[in-house]
Length: 435
Image (cartoon, rainbow, N blue to C red; front, side):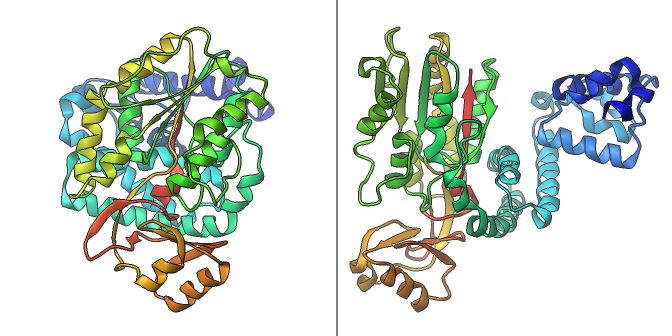
């Protein structure tokens, strides 16, 4: 790269092979282009297309300028600038939804069968979902549903051919699956570390919380991961706090014991480990100076999800209310103020699902556990027999478990917000890092 660039950019070449300095260079050249003095021709089609992708995905931040300045820009430069969204209001949100929708629509057919491809899309999916349910128009919600259906079709191919191989990978640099998150935290260099697990939080709910955290001037790094499959609390949350594969004969009632055992094996004394729960407007004080490793569980969003009867718009309004008034923002700020490196994640996401009909009584009798989107049978033979008996159901098997892959659920006619299957919005989960 240096050899290619040096004849054109000379001393600036070093800036162009480092991500942060390249971003600064492009911003400076964009400003120069407004004055007609840039060394770069931003109207060149391939460059313009690549730059647009960087802005859409957030790898480059758009520059805030006045509306008159924006309107005076040539079209090839507009992708790098924005006007004040708070004054533009609904219109700017609609423009951003359209932009994200087009990008995701173009991306869906050619997405690679790799975890990183899905991790790169996670923040965009979260942003689009949050905007769609904020704007709340039927057309936009239909478009979002269509995009998620398209992406989920490709995602299920990834689950079948790529997901399971991730379980054995090290979590030190990137925890691909939820049971590697503790390994990632352990590898971090900070002296004090805190894990906040918000049960049942999907990508667009995380976007609402993350945006509020950014507004308080906290820097949040997105590092998406995958839940355990089937995406139920009993196993995925157990895997998270255990730091290894869950025991499928157990639930998550021993998670504090498992969490403490993990860290004691890493030579952290028990008196330096803390484990607690946070609830709406009933949040504990940040741990004292003797605590080096802390974990907190919040079940508020999961309770809201299971209590929602009017679909995602209702859940969106509940989530916004929770972020603003539950005290969670103050709690997080206090942890950061007490010098904790903070890791915010969930055990699984959720989605709005439609009816497949209730499971028959004889099926229920064969199950050791079940949710609205999974059934764990007593034997693998029973699981295979279920799939053979109901070939019209979009489902797959993992050992003795059968899980749904589409946006349906084992419920009476109607809709429900739930989890337990392998849908993109259940299995692709956020991990936010604040250091």
